[in-house]
Every structure is written in structure tokens, then in C-alpha cells.
Image (tube, rainbow, N blue to C red; front, top):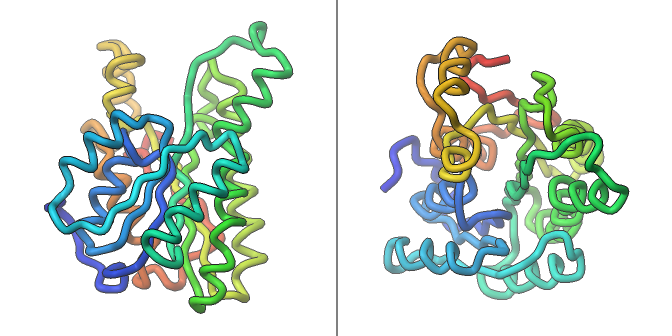
Length: 253
């Protein structure tokens, strides 16, 4: 059982999480399961998804669809698969992303388009796919995952930071248009979250020392820290929150 608050409004609600097999997404899936939600998740990594499914509590209502979110037709089929398995989707967590490093000189038009497909485009089309469910249900919640990388001006990944900055505009646009349908849209901008990928690929003693110097909160931030925020913005307890972008970085910015 994950630690944290229990939100009665999430019990029995069908939730869709993209990139849910590992990292922050895995923690989000686990936290919604602990709330008694019906959880569908999409991911390219079938092996990680299988391991997660095997480790979840018996009786959990969970459905996995293997999907490359850069393929919009495949995305739509996967969303429909979750809907058929678990019922109408009233919570969407647009979590999937890839923060691969790259230089300005190495970027081609094709790479630019692929990075935007991996980090931005699917957020819009996932929202588009679940809006009818939310409208019929009388409301819903969408949580888009941004990043503080563009706020702090992090280098060595211009395509990623540009795509992530656009999520703020997407969030506000969706919130404005969907508000009359009682659909709330917010985004969370995590700081440096210590997923296994970050630890394996990017974390160094020097980077950790700089982070602890710059963060107001003097501890490493973990996936569960973000998952608990997602629960709040998905629940009815945050019913007055929409059209906002919330920084969750331990006071780094």
C-alpha cells in the first residue's frame, strides 16, 4: 500500500496513464491502484509492463496496452482497448516522455518531428480520444506532465525542452475549451525525479551536489512525490483547480 491520502472520489474511476510501465508512470499506476481505481496504462516496454502487472495486488482492476504513442492510430486503438476493458475513461494522465540528450548540431528535421511526437503530440490526441467519455460522464480530469527543464533553461536537449514548454500552452488551451464540460486540465512540472533511468544515465556526484545546493528542499525527489500530486489533481478534492501549471521541484526554480 502506497503512503499518502485516500481520495474517495477516485475509487472505481477509470484512469488512463501513458508511459505507465516504469519510472514516474509506474508509481502513478501503483498509487491509483491503491485508491481502488480501475487503471489502464500504455507503454512501449512490454517487459516492464509485465513485471509491474505481476507485482500489483491480486484483484486490482488493471489493463495494459502495448503502444507506440508516436503512432496516433495505434494510440487510438490502445485507448479503445482500455475503454472496452475497464469502462469510460474519466481521468487521463499524460505522463509519457523521453528526455534523450542531443546537441543543436545533430538535430535533423526528422529528429525534431520525432521528439515532438514522443513528448508533445500524443498528449493532445490522448485528450481528444477520452473527451467524449468525460463529457458523457459529466466531467473529468486531465493531468499533463511538463518539466522544469525549460524553466531553468537546461541545455543539451533543445527539442525536449521546447516540446515540454509547449505543454503549458496545451494545458491552458484545453482547460479553457473543456471547462464548460466540467473537465479540468492541469499540468505538473517535475524537477529532477530519481527514477532508475535518471540514476543510470544522468545522475553524477557533481550533479547531485549542485541539485542539493539549488533545491530548497534538501532531499532527492522520488516518483511517489509526483504520483501523490497527480492523485490530488485527478480527485474531486481539487475541483476548483484548472488551467494551471504546478511546479513540483523541491524549490529548485
